[in-house]
Amino acid sequence: MLSTTPRTSLGRSKERGRTSRDDLYAVLDAGLVCHLGVVVDGSPRVVPTGYGRIGDTLYLHGSTGATSLRGDGEVCVTVTHLDGVVLARSVFHHSMNYRSAMIYGRPRLVLDEEERLAGLRAITEQLAPGQWDATRAPTRKELAATAVVALSLAEASVKVRQGPPKDDEEDYALPIWAGVLPLRQSWGAPETDPAMTSELEVPAHVAARPAPGR
Amino acid sequence: MLSTTPRTSLGRSKERGRTSRDDLYAVLDAGLVCHLGVVVDGSPRVVPTGYGRIGDTLYLHGSTGATSLRGDGEVCVTVTHLDGVVLARSVFHHSMNYRSAMIYGRPRLVLDEEERLAGLRAITEQLAPGQWDATRAPTRKELAATAVVALSLAEASVKVRQGPPKDDEEDYALPIWAGVLPLRQSWGAPETDPAMTSELEVPAHVAARPAPGR
Image (cartoon, rainbow over all chains, first blue to last red; front, side, top):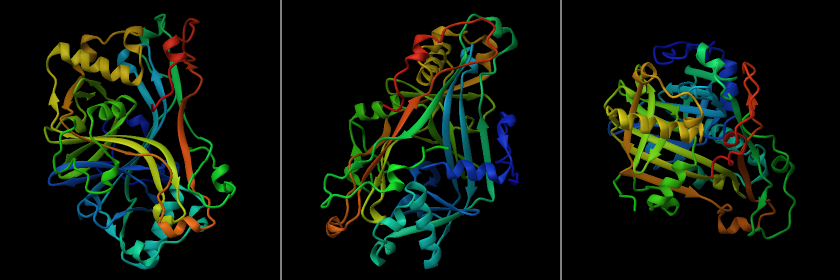
């Protein structure tokens, strides 16, 4: 079960809330980037960035100089999947079908080398499964330039909307088409780097990668 | 030209910066949702939400009770398009191809009825082009329940990464496949609401909607 705190209790559209940790994992594991919110000099900043999950910990990384990971304040991490546009009979009831997760917490700078590597591996594998073992490992210098932070998934909420529009009772009689326009993501054909120095086949984990977002 | 303030000057990867207003408009106009960052009780909150643009103003809406639009503090709005996963020869140089825009500002609650309607129309048309005129207009009661805020695009930055990986010179000799796995978005077949009370064809603006994200 996801714990409930005032800010993870849904104020609006409570019927869209999900309360199991599996729902949280499913939304996170299907994503490629999150939107990381931090407060810098009192103002919010929202940055798209990669992430990885191990159990109940989310890992983020960045340059050791990046402002967005430098502070020790609270952050909010949001992952959103758009599944379709909900076309209602009234302007007012237009909506989106989506799955989203929101995590609040105070990230911990990871200092242990073993956890740092595990975190970086999780982040790489989230973006590009199979690539950690298929490519050159990070050097000591590269590792020194990379900050890894860990965020507990203890305070999180999940919201899901699926299905047809919900119109006002009297509007169902209107001669207006209503429904959902589904939004899909897919991988295009892999584009080999023109700078390749030898002819190599596209690896199977790239060529046959399952469709994203699910 | 986009103006430059300390927080919209790119600290990292400066070569990814774009400086024309047309680049900003292009990123915004291709999107379906933004991630809105606000500060609530000193902590960041990041919420996915729809938006619309008229000239150099971005419009957002929400319930009059929604916490994220209630404050009068600064916000950050980020729109991100993921175009592909960049698969490098080294773990360290893995990346994403993307287009993103970030806008900072203090939103203004829109009170003028004409501007409120124009803003709501822009938000609806961004999500569902053609639907404002095709569906039932908002009632006085619906309008009263909806808050519309305007955010100037005066302080904004645009970042774009496209193309193959950039590996370290010595890594190009490695026998490792490198390239880009492009990520595409498309509309699925429209799903008619099973609760339709009459048989109507899917309108052309829905059935023939151009692919999203571009």
